[in-house]
Image: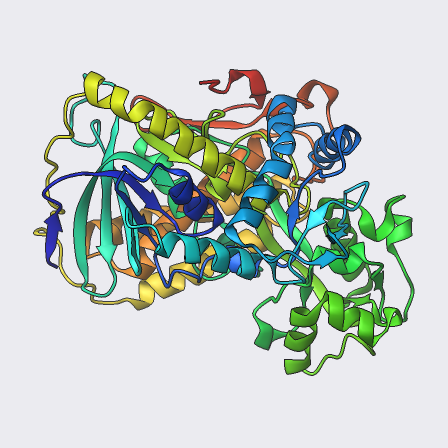
Length: 556
């Protein structure tokens, strides 16, 4: 396989082209050269799939305080309150920034139309009908394409980060120097050097058999950061979205939280409503509660799905508020204006990730992680609906500001980025049996779904741990002997992330938020503000520690 390296480093390399990566690129000053990579087409990530909106407290100090309380309550008291306040207080500013870029939010009269979603005590979700993510991407991309300092390259899949420690300079502080990246069109691995690297690759829900996420959500940034030496936190908290269309042809099409926010109710096949039996807020309970309730009813009755009904609101209301969902469901033969929709939970959002500080900076100098790739302390044990896009925008700006402030200083303090070795594939051959990759991919995702799902037990987790250990050895052996490919790189990342999820789940001996285990069904007050921390040790053996207080995370 051909390979090459750039002659001179760029200022900022952004790996990932969703809301986090694009907003960071736009917030960087124009005198910095920015290279933004997308591993498929530029608009194929998770952001365009976001139907609901952006949570923003636009109603003054009382709304801010309630948004903070709602976030901490949904996160089962695990969120870092200082982080929550910083993000929530920035909400209005982020909406103003998007409006200045031309974002066409839904409005009524002279004000933005705000909807409500589960876990929120008030209407505070700014949205563009039911296709906010797609509209946000279009707005950001239009602005990115107008910036001469930003270069976008599609079909670029990062393989690994390049660091001083990877190059053998273990006597120096670990510093990120760039990344090895596979160009999927030329089949070339390039060594890209950069003064600053931002990981914005999204989450890892593709580790599960059923997911709302696009195929690219394979935990690439989390796995690369972990292998490079970053700490990772709270990986046991994988959010399952309660309401995905139960239709094989739809590939787990998500039915927005806003449908329940606007009055939709969940029903059993006989038309009985069941959520009031599980939570005082019924359908507006936090996602972890609703997902477990649906899972419980499906298993209790031996049924395939439950039903979400908003048909009583009438055709005009539904077509105005949910035009995209309505049209998509019609394609599969479901008319939500006249009938309930069959729904099931599916893996949706990775609440844990690479440990970062308030700037999005990781444990490695020059390396940032933002968006779903990161663990900021905002989500805790369960993400509040529509807080994710807000986090992307806030930390995209924070990382950009920090890079701009440090850029000149970095030049004076650090030596120039050294030349890095080209990607060496001289000792490997072309794969002889690609079916092994496909088989391991399927086995891994099914094991995660069966043993590390919505309801867990220690025995199930131990079974998953054993199977993942076998798969990791097979995958690493395959990686060591054959040239890299798209499927192999993603599978290698997924198995690393799956290992982190299982180790983290085994180490938390309580149930909290998205992590529910029958062996430890109660939440422990002593762990109310404790994060699960996984740390690569000095000898490379990966350790996952007992939950520790949030205050042990980096602060700057």
